[in-house]
Length: 210
Image 1 (tube, one colour):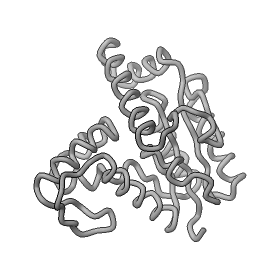
Image 2: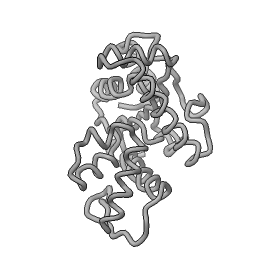
Image 3: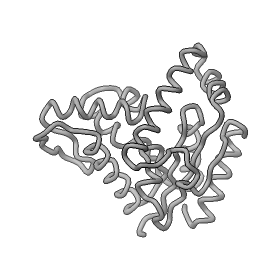
Image 4: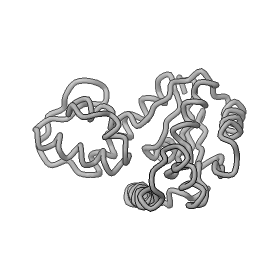
């Protein structure tokens, strides 16, 4: 493997993946890759990046369908690829996998989401991490950060978890939360986030990453 290694982080809603990921990357001296495909789609369509990232795979798939209707789509490596037929979830998944593998082949980094642990599998120079926790504690974490109504956050949490779990199940025929897919599984709601970051960094260095 030519890169500096890859840490993949799979995080359920409210488990702190968007905080842990950048911190781990900074400690290891790696680039933080946060949902590369939706970011590129957002740029192509002229929509806010936050909109494309909001629900990960669910929003991204919808945006790809819009791109398809325009007759072209962004190539993850640059440029534009003509579209001759309606894009489907498989097409989106294949493009996503291409980006993740290019990251691993290149300088490496910390990849949040995108089922990257399943894409890279047993590849040398990787650490696959799962962040999770009980629903009520994840709800608490989101409410502390956003101040939004609990019922509203609960609906979003359940919809988000269901979408991501469904995507992984359909695409890879596995349970997104199964510990078999990861080297390290952490209940990030039971520990200070700095402790979670330290655990991931130590595990990554133990696997020669960073």
